[in-house]
Length: 448
Image 1 (cartoon, rainbow, N blue to C red):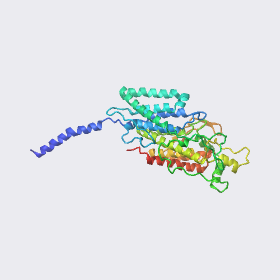
Image 2 (spheres, helix red, strand yellow; image 1 turned 180 degrees about the vertical axis):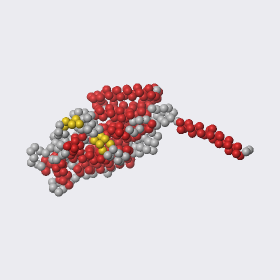
Image 3 (cartoon, one colour; image 1 turned 45 degrees about the horizontal axis):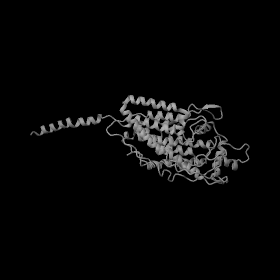
């Protein structure tokens, strides 16, 4: 047989048989979560943060970092089958149960699964807030997106997707309920020089928080540093740190007062660390990630913030370090009448280390790793909120930064300006937060 003819026939068969297969693969619909926007995440964060904002402080006694962590994990796992480059967190997070598998060979609509997971977690986690503040907003968002998604994909796909998201969320919520089961039943406040004293005489706040189950085993390894040793010697690091707080307090600028008030997060505000959930909302709004990246951000940031907060209170109630007011009143300025007062009201728990330094450092490390080390960012938490910081009511506005690290530095220093932390507590807090975030990054693999 003619050899050129055979070659031509073979090439024809390749074109006829092989190329259509390749074209079919190229034209296959993209069913991954990355094809969708993060609108559903942003809208649920809007509702959640609106419920957490209160005009007169926090009446609930909750831990918002738990909300962020478990909502983030539920969101992530609810759309994980549509995230082919990512792996489950089950088996990586402490005692996390196995997650359900989606049905094979059928279609899922990942925005609807994400919506179901976040809606379920919001109603369960935010229940004490929902009843008092914004139940209508929860219902309106849930019903509105349900109607929209059902019209977009039809009953079968919609209901299958919602059922999957709800199943994941229920498993995650049940897992979350066991994370603080080991709290002790009593505690003893130590006494002595340099030991914490309540400014109001009240009992210490959250003395058991550090006993929460770590969501990542080993996340606090080599993270907690020792406090400064107590001393009344004017040349000692302890005295120098306390005296800086005293000196700065006497000449606070308007900008320093504004910074202190902005991150005070109380009366009015987002109490007990809820400010950082607003930061997450701002990130989703400003960087506009796809649904996959938004879920990854939510989960990684929430996991890190939860263990960072647990580690912060563990350190506080290990060392019971005094606040600046008690040292300044007894050592630096004992004869003042009236007694020295910080610009901000002193929180009702020990000083070392600074919560805000730890939280902001953890947050900055995670966000810089996802979105970049030198990207501008604006914190809008109190834009439109009016407060009096010495010159009459004014809009607290928003805070703009050239990087997440710049934001961290301002948040950390806000506590010194407020007179409620000394510099060493802030500097070591930043180290502890970063080390916690690094430990988690080394132990939890999101990517396959």
